[in-house]
Image (cartoon, rainbow, N blue to C red):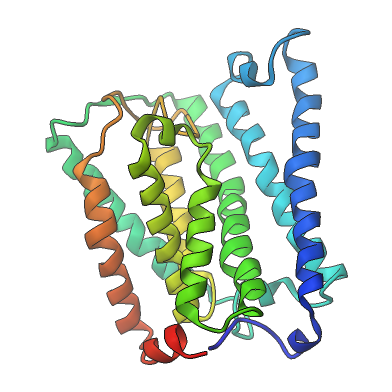
Length: 299
């Protein structure tokens, strides 16, 4: 099975990846909370809980603070790439000689168009109540922060799950189908602490797992994360800039606020069982994926 790698890859053992995991987890679990704690000390009254931080700052500042762990995570991978693996960061993105921006923006544009079409349909869906939430100054700052940091946030998740971990587990098994399920389930597990899980229950877990399976599958078949990263970025920017709600993990001053109660809307079912397969079909036709069986099932 093809894996995005470079000629130095055979010299890199599993122990290098495990050490890198420790470095990345140190950044996420120890360094990030420490820095957030320092920020909290300068913002909130003494004795207040870290969970109350959002009460003392604007949504934009809280959103900015929430992006900090992803920035540290991305920098951790970059440092491991440079000083531990001694190879370009690009080799965790793609097997191609350079990052394919055409693929990235095609995926971004395609999913953005689909999301906008789906959004307009919500106006005739009685299960959704949308409120115009535009506040010019707050929105401008939100767009600036989002365009700067959401590519890093989604880039970290894609690089870690569909680049770094895919190569790590690829040293244990060359069957793509195993890698799809392993990293897809881990991606779903990452989101178990999100408030959507509490509001929507098991279905939200299934949604995240299927989304992880989808993005891992297209990364393996295309031999790079350009398509999955573009999709992920479009998806997150839409939920941050265009429409938000009071119960999702990132609450922002988006253009619209969905004030309807948490529910399993038709759009989630359509996304998983119609749009994801449709995206795979479009990608397979555009990029001529011919060797599905070899990539997914041959050792």
